Amino acid sequence: MFLNLPASERHAYVYRVVSLERLLELFSTARNVLVSPELWDDPFENFILKSQRVSRHGWYGQCWTRQRASDAMWRIYSPDSTGVRMRSTPTRLLEGLRATTKGDAFIGKVRYLPNGPLMHFARKALKRGYLTVAANAAHTLLVKRPAFRHESEVRLLLNRQSGFGGKLLNYEVDPHTLVDQLMLDPRLSPEEAAKTKTEIRSKTEYRGSIKRSLLYGPPPPLT
Image (cartoon, rainbow, N blue to C red; front, side):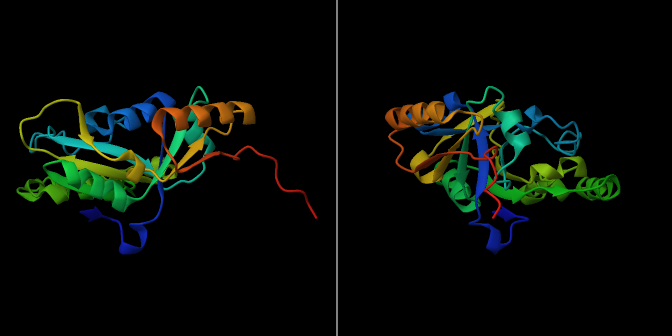
């Protein structure tokens, strides 16, 4: 189910930066990995599901962004300059999750709410019976404070109320269908990028586009 995503945005590109090791693992195992929201960094995240009125177990997610190019994105998620940015769409992500998992699958755009609206939303969510609906509970994982607006997040979510209590959940997926472009860190030299591109091709047989980000490239000459 799509949440906070109108039809016009369901095929728009979303991005995720991962380590080269994680990328190669995705292709070698053909399994994507979701994590428990308990592992997310922002202390306000998951705050409603941490209440005593609902179990936080059984929820898993993965964060993507609508930001195509960001200095912060590369520096945070590719600290050693070897990260790779994957490109997909909300539709492909949701279809891939639904195809091989049991449970309630969602993908949604995060809303960035000031404290007042955030607390109003929390009081509404904690009313009796509200969180027994999976889509309502999913919405509680799609709110953050305005300080994080620059992340422009889209989150892939799965609810499995089957007693599974692990922190990670992996599921089968075709990475060649899921990912339609790879982008290498802009801090790599052209020679390093060419070497990494060759390594990816040889180890994954990926035939999609692989480019080196030009985020730090010189501007075009003035005319």
